[in-house]
Structures are given as structure tokens and as C-alpha cells.
Image 1 (tube, rainbow, N blue to C red):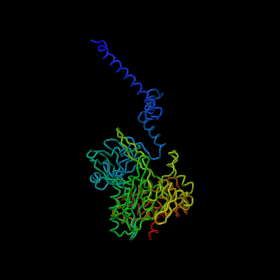
Image 2: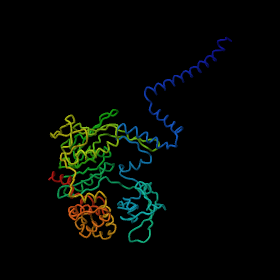
Image 3: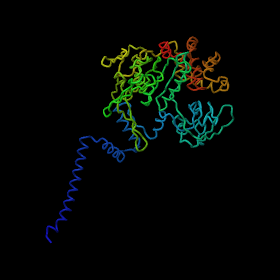
Image 4: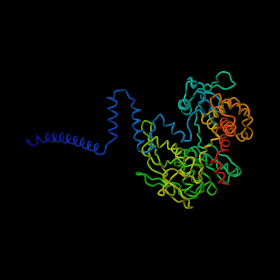
Length: 530
């Protein structure tokens, strides 16, 4: 046998080992090059987390540390990218889904007790006979009264998968002892429509608090009902509506715009332009419309207001909107958490990007409304300054501006009336709210004579006796005033008190028609439509 034949397998094995070693070193070198040239920040974060966990002077919560690191990164990107932990996921997403699973009550924490404001119609609690005014003292043998329970704690204990049981022990005024209820949880609808009613013979009013999965359906049902009641003109109230789903916003705008009209378009660095156009057969395409906005109207609210303004389809009334023109996509994580990442900007039909400036200061951005107040914008339209570079013109010739929210066609300043100093102190202290709650709770059986919110509005008023009791109550709580100041505030106090009583009895359906009788923004919209 030749010597070469004997040594060939050995040489091949040696070459293979050398090749593997060289390849591994090259791979390491390439990884190091990539790390140093591209930053490989994810690798750095992992390393830093490792060193902190191993060597830091004190014990640290790794999950909390990771969450803070992620939030720190996102805040520097933009003010709306957001990390949602697994614990917060349902709490944040449920309101936009249109339903959740639970016992079906709306409640408030009053005097350190979970107090039922109203059971959800058709829900498991209503079916068992749980009533407004009931106090939940125990949940599954756990005391929840007098222990400083929070809204979040209460919701976590009462919500749960459909079909599961929860036992509550309730204190009811006029009934001795505690009453036990075993509730089988079910799917509970959540509503984005606060109120829908006729202001007069031909003007209807609809208020939306968010844009959720069910908003379009709720809106259409309400609009059809009001049209049957004679609605020929509409006021759409989006004040304080912070937004929600883009699709819900385009669906609502579609009801007012003719086929083919541009509603909104979006574009981003990694996203192509995407356009949303109106379809045929809108519910309210030709009738007059006024849209109410304020500094709390954001995102999807601004899409609707901007689309109707840019298409010369509505009169926008109120104050400049928030200025959120960024679109987020939700990316689920393996542990149940999620990343809401800004992927594009949205633009109104004339080409306006209404996102307000952001310099990386998260708190400054979200507290910008205070700057508007101190700068005088809340009280004076002339305090708002737009540059010509952000000027756009609608097909009808209206001049509109981008760069920081939707500017209304009809500006209505915030009411600052020195004559109402006493009323403002009362309202801001929450005393009117608390007095109304206690009064309703004490006299609930007396209100059974009012079958509907409308009959309550027509038949109930704050009498002189009740008003005097309230002034004495406020005095005991440390808010005193001269008789002249009390009289100047009487009308405002009586209206707000009656509104709160109506909310305690009928929820928002009773509150808004009474509260808004003295609403300057709503009154301006009615004037415009007339």
C-alpha cells in the first residue's frame, strides 16, 4: 500500500479540524464587526441586564428593569409608541374591543366602598337583581370595603372568564345585614356612545367617547333612531375623545361623505402610502353637520374632524384639538405583552399632518395643554400662531392649518367668569358631585315616579330647601361665601347638581341633556346650524 494512501485520511481529518477552527474564529470576528459597526443595541441591553443582575449592589426586579428600559427607548422615539405589559394588556385593550367578560356593573369608589352606579342592561348582575346604590362589601369572602380599594383592584376581582362564578356580599340601604349574590360572569358590552338625543325639533346630538370595534354600529343605530324622530341636522360631539381604531374613524367619516371622497391617507418610512376613500350610501351625506372638538380630541377624532373640514362637509366648533397624527401598530410578544409601535403618520385630505411637535420631552408633550392655558390660547383665538408654510386650502376655499391639531372654523373660548368664583370652587372640589351622590342614594325610592330621563328633566329641580342644605354642607366642608356670591352661582350649582342626580339614576343618557343646556360650545353649534 502506498504511503500517501495511508496518510490521506489523517491529513483530511486535520484539515477539517483546522477549517472548523478558522471558520469559528472568522464567525466570531464577523459578529464582533457587526456588533461594533451596527451597534447591535439588543446585544448591549442583554449584556447590561446580565451585569446588573449579577453584580449590582442591591437586589433588582428584572421584569421592572426591562420594562423601564423599553419605555425609555420608546419615549425618545416618539410620544405614542408604547410597551404594554402582560398585566396591563386586557386593561388597556378591552375598552376598544367593544366588550369584556365580567359581572356587568358600572361602579365608583365612594367613601372607600365599591358602589354600584348602574347594572348593565341584560347583564348577569341586573338579572340577579343587583341595583344602583348597592355597596359591594365582600368579593369571594375577601373584604373590599374600608381597606382603600382602588378601581384597578376592584376591576381585577370582578372581571374574569365567561362562565366562572364570583360571590359578592352587598349592603343595600333599607335592608338589614348583607345580601349574598353568586354571579356567573358573562360577556359584557362596552359602549363608545355616551348620548344621542334631539336638541330641538330638527337638530340631533350624538356624543362619542372613543373609537372602538363597535363605534360605527352604535353610531348608525343612534343616527337612524334620531332621523325617525325628525333629525335633519346633526351635532357630532368629539370633545375629550382621545381616539381609538383608525377603521372606526374612517367608517364614521364615510357616513357623511359622498362616494370617492378622500378621508385620510397614511405613510411611513417602512409603509407605503395607504388611502381611505368614502364608499356609497352614507347615512348623512347631504344634511348639515357641526363637529365639536377641544384640546382633548385626538387621533381618530382628528381624522373625522379633518376629513369633514377638508371636504367642506361640516362646521368645526370649539377649540384646537390635541395634535396626534401618528399611527401605531400593535405587535404581540410571546409573554402576553405587546409593543405599540408608531409606523406611519396620517394626513388629512388637503395634505395636513396635524401631529404637534415633539422634542423628546415626554412630560412636556403631554402637559402642553397647560401651556395653551398660560399662553392665552384657551381664552383667545388670536393667541394661536400658524406659519404660512403650514397653510392649506380646501376645495371650497377655506384656509386650514397643519402642524398641531385641527383648528375649528368657529372658535369658542373657555369660560372664565369671575362672578362664578364660588361655583368654580365648589365644582373643582367635587362637593356638588358628592352631595348629589348622597342625595340620590338617600332619596332613590322617591325618584321611581320618573320613568325616563326626559320625565325626570321635566319634573325635578333643586328646590330652595335642597339648595340651602347644600350651601350649609359646603360651609361645613370649609367653602364659605358671601350671600351675593352664592346667589350669582345659584343657577350653575342647580344645573350641575341636577345633572349629577340624573347621571346617578340614568347614567350618561340622563346627564348630558341637562348638563349641556348651558354649554357654550354646544350652543354655538346650534346657532351655526340654525
